[in-house]
Structures are given as C-alpha cells and as structure tokens.
Length: 397
Image 1: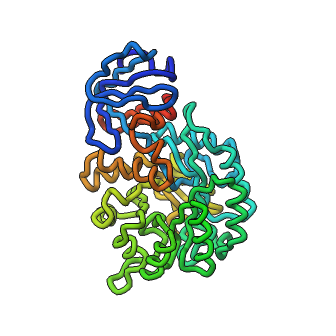
Image 2: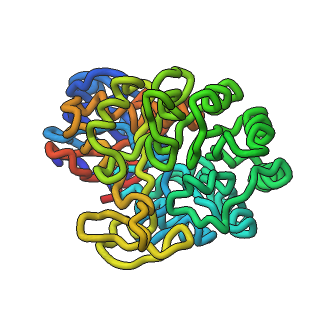
Image 3: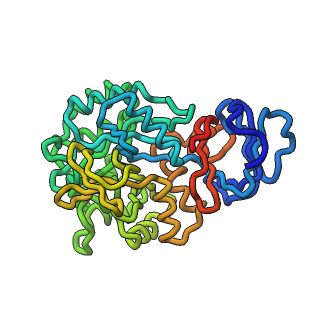
C-alpha cells in the first residue's frame, strides 16, 4: 500500500486505486472518501480533488468491501457473550473487527434467567461502542430460552422455558429498546402471545430450535416471524409428505433464511438448494461462532456445556451433537464462493446488505454509499483480510 499512512489521521481521507465492492453494484476500480466517520463519496477512477483531505492511500491491487454484519454469534477467541461481562463484550468487538466483521448481534443461547438479565444489561451499556478498532454492537439476540427440547441442539434442556409474556416483557423493558432479535420455537404453548408482543415492539422474531410443521410455520410467518434461525440445523427435517419448517422457508418469500456455511453444519449441496429457493436476496450468512473459535483444538466450556473442538474445527458435545461453529463470517463468504462458483459481489450481499436489512440498520450500514458509516474491509487478491475500518477508524489487522 503506497501513499500516506492511513493510521496518521482518521478524520478526513481518501482510499483509491482499489477494486471497490459497494455491496449493491458491480465492482469497479475507484475510490472512497471518508470524513467524520462517514462515507462522503464513492466513485470510479481517481478523485478529482485530493487536496481537500489530509491523507490519501493508494490501495492498488486490493479490494475494498463493506464491513461484514454477523447477526448470530456467541463468541470468538475465548470471549463468550454468556460471561455477562462488559470487558468481554469490548474484547469480542475488537477481535471481530480484526477478521472483517464490523458490526454484530451478540447472541445468548438458553441460559438461566439471572444470566439473561445480566447480559441484557451489559449489552445495553455496550451499545454504540463501534469505532476505535471495535465492531459495533447492534443490539442483543436471544436465542432462547423458549425453544423446543426435541431440537435443543447444544442447548441445555434444564435452561429451556415455556414462552412467558411476563419474562419477555421484563427483558424487553430492561433492554430499553436494545433487544434486537429473539429466536423461539413458534409451535410450543405460549409462543403466539410472545410473538405478538415482540412484533408490536419492533423486535425481530426468528423461528429456530423447532419442530414446527409446514402449516405451523406459515401461521408463524403470518404472525410476524421473519427469520429462519440457522436453516436446516436444529429444526424439523424436510420430507416430501411432511415438508415442515424447511418447506415453508423455501416457499414463502416473507421469511429470510439464515445459514451457517462453515462446511460442517450444512452440506454445500444443501446451501446450493437453499440459494435456488431463496436466492441471494433472501439468504443471510451467519457464523454462529462460539467462544472457542480461533483457539484451536481442545476441550472448552461454551453454552453452559463442555465442548470438544477437533483438528478439523468441529465443535461438539461429548455425544457428538454440534455445539456451534468455529468459523468467522469471512470464512463463510469464501466457502460459499468456492461451493457455488458465485462471484464475490453476489455472495457479499448475504453478509452485508441482507443482515443490515434484517436488523434494521440499512440506512447506515450494509453498502459503501455516501452518508453511511465508513465500515469497510480491505482484502488481498486471495480474499484474505488485510485490515478493517469501523466508523472511519482503524485499521484492525
């Protein structure tokens, strides 16, 4: 990288000469101008006037993409959302920025009520901390505890609860509007009332860890359920005489399909089938990463249970049940490109534009567009992360 040192100033600068992937257009060689943490201009070729900025960086030979947005992540590099710690959230935000994720929903699996309340409080305090080398926390994702025990996956059964309007009302009030998403099993008793409450409050509702039938899923979608939590995993399977929730997700355009593309949770052929049904326009990539991600093989504790990570990166309970992913969101993007032969610009949408729309932040994130937050990632020709910028600040390597 030639030119002025990007680290010398973060108030007003231009990056140029790179292949620019805006997220909503075909890539082109051009520039991005940043001022005050926002994107001021994006264009082809060289900027007309470089004198108005304090720093210019030549990124010829590199790619610039929008910052990735992860809507389902439990932890990374030893940081666990369930630690209920402010310091853990800050360290998690910093660690994620280093691997290309510029904003995220810290995700809490089924845990005891007091832990849920502590995490709600800590996430509320941590909201808006992005920049300064940290990914921005967009809100909290509660993956439970209102889940079906038959499809609990790695969740502890003793932490699961029947849907309770009193509990969800308490947590929502405690969050002061920072509860972004709740994943629940829509078929279990009490779920309808909870769904109605959350939809009325503007909280995204996802169906997951569920045995919902095709008919029950369509009913839940009509109630306002808008996301299928890690499609295929921890849900009723598809059969031609019993299509179940997967059949409903495939056929109903109102619901987004979230999918873990780590090469462990879902076969590449199943990803191809999902994209044939939903397209890149209604599919969202997530990491579902857990705290041991990035630490290598070993025995860890995550989601309240012992997790074994093997040499291939599979994270499992002692009985072989998958216990979350050890991949980053950028890993998932690269995997989908490799499996489907789709170009980067099409796959990127599922990790940038779509999650920004689902989480309600598309007015300021998801694409490289003037007026939006200056969240972007610089990649080399092998699509490896070179550095990451969040809110115009960085780089994180």
